[in-house]
Length: 183
Image (tube, rainbow, N blue to C red; front, side, top):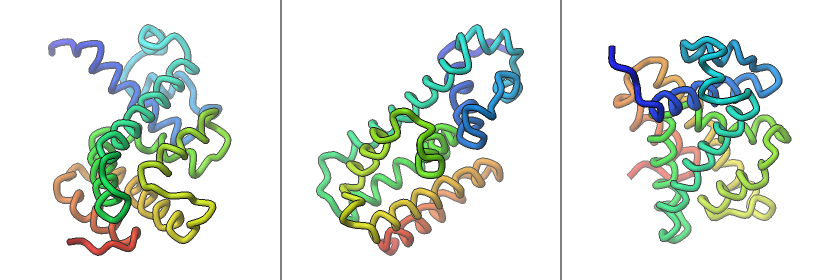
């Protein structure tokens, strides 16, 4: 079997690590569990990332790169249902391809205080959906509901293995949560 290029290996490591950090948090995730998740020895994993802290930071940064990329793609769209739908579509596609990364990005909603840059993460999402959660609580709750549903459903789609079948159903669920019926 040909050896994967380092970038491919690092992406696989980052996604698997992000999933474990999202599920268990930093403190409860061991280097051994991280290595086992990607089929490497602890030494092999540490060859790619010098410490658990470095891997954690790299995973968080990669999840932010995804979020910034989605924001960049929708930033020219006016606020409203079309922008929200496009944001959900892009995030869903990322989540179907890299479920760990998106799970980690949304961890700031379920584990406040763990991410030292949590406020920046929240600002990215607020900017993506053009919302001020302090003045638009009902809408903020709908957005969190849509993103939570997307995170859970994309994880299930990845477990079940038929992402093509799941994608339109995930999107319809998210649109409903946002209050936008599917077109």
